[in-house]
Length: 481
Image 1 (cartoon, rainbow, N blue to C red):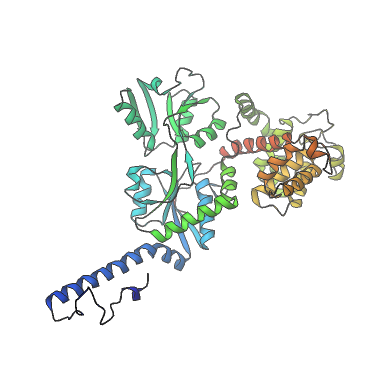
Image 2: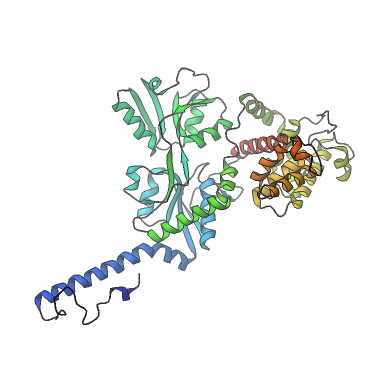
């Protein structure tokens, strides 16, 4: 708001049937003083609304306050990662500034750090609780999740809220779960609540899986993701009837910054960026097979070490994360170098004879030749899909590795006919399965395709990749730029 909007022009009538105020008159002086103070207050309020955003743009940096865990922010091989971190980085890019990160040791430090000016906004998967709304202003919701009760898979007796009677529920500090459980106590359910202020939710979930504690509560996306790492847990039932919204927090009155955050979320929800980031950290979390995950965990302990040096070498040579390559190999052969398929593919990387010849492989059953040739072929596919961005490019390449470039091309052509983006994996997830149907494949270039298989293939690779990434997380101990 500009200051000229508050100017009082000489001769302007202040009220009906009154003369212009004269400074010498006591009542006039009082009116002038009130008007002056109102103007000053409005100017200050306007300045306060824009103060943070103006400073951010002037300095060229914005500081996100967050928490160190597998969902918000962590470091792997000097790379900053995490669902909230990637969202915050995208927001900084949206503003055209650099991102700094302020890491708090515990969740209860987040909003006080914001109030003290240690950062510009809190990005930490925070539920918009009434107590928090008193301390800060929150953005519109960007994620809505339910809080789920978690028990060991062998504990089949806890099926509903009533079964929590006379039970101890373990929680991490500063969560909405505690308020919900206290309401249940007020309604007559005898629950003992034990809060672990310094324990991350992953630790409590692990303790449930190992039988050290009986019950904990976590957001649904966190619970589903951790079920991959700890397949002996059971996600029993929702704690509340309604899901809870997550938002970013800014200091009270920072309306301009809040408006930018809301506009940013609108944009990334519309253009697909949000979904891309979400799938990067919560890929197909609903997909779960207890036996499959347990078998994978056993085989990465027993079989992977033998091939890990070759996998790392090939991955470094062709520019991939070695854990992704390991996940692909497990999906293809379960680390069995002699694996053969009825389709004629062989070896750790399950290569066809024409592909092996193209990659210069003489013996598909030789582990080193198979891995080096297979990763080289994956890089060739990845390079081919250069019109796709980031994760989409990788997922399309993985699908092509499974089903062939021709069927991917047919799926892309079908996506165009359906007004879908042919370079988005979410589009091909829809069109590939359609190529099983005659009305679609009869007009395609490469004919019938078992299109559900590449979709399932990609989902499985991402699941295994996520589990391997989980085992390699490094945690920061200080603030990072």
